[in-house]
Image (cartoon, rainbow, N blue to C red; front, side, top):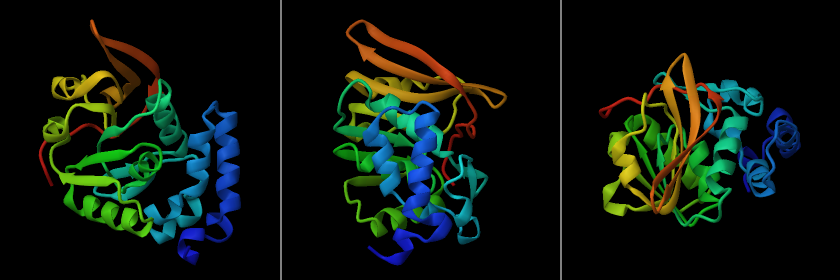
Length: 219
């Protein structure tokens, strides 16, 4: 592994281990999630000037008015998605810089990820290539459309908040499938976990969150 991926000082594995310990203290229980987050160099997903802050529990800017989610939120959403059992095919809405994508790609068989901003998608592809994660398909598209050609999905994870859950995404869930998505206006958002059952959809509200809004169109 290259020195850039290994990190040094504030980007070292030891720093990532401290981050994982803090996540445990915040309530993250899934050791698989914690171990993958220790193994994944978050510092390569942010600008070099911010690398020393990459393992703080804070969201950081990645350009284009977008952010990389704080480690707790990445861990929590991944844990909620996988809590009911292993997933084979997962749709991610909002690739961003590719950090959440990289975490998912190490925990499920195949990730289909959609990003509306082409410059971010290109960066994410470069990051995942550097990490040799090859079980990811990328699409430059409006996230609200999902990716119907590859539906249904066992899991869907959204990294932006619509004001209500898009019907299109609900219809792309497999029976028994799970979706983790923030919902609400910028000032009041809640993290939902939706499970598709034989009778319809079971919707659980998990906790308050703060995400960028879910926008339409491509950029």
